[in-house]
Length: 118
Image: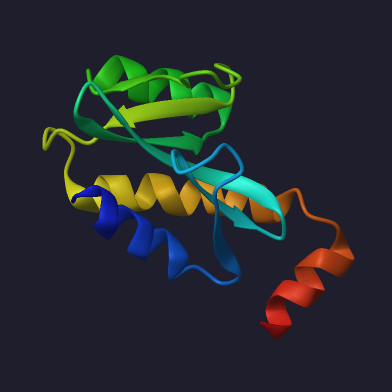
């Protein structure tokens, strides 16, 4: 997957919206105003930062060299993945879905209800 394909996949999720709070880079993808993905390039390689359950975050870092602690993010809850072709696209999609679900799970009941109407 390239950066554009990553963004397109993220934006398919219910209520997902793109934002550029830091200028033209990075692209931040949010749901109900809360970030669940951050897309940028690091050393010419596309990278995506995703929220992750802490124990799972550690396991993914041990299993995949391309998965590192979140770059400029809370390293306990965020991973940054170098999209260099070493991680299967399906696993990357699963990680995006997990990040989205964690953020949606943290929304208020009213926000989740509003999200269902989108």
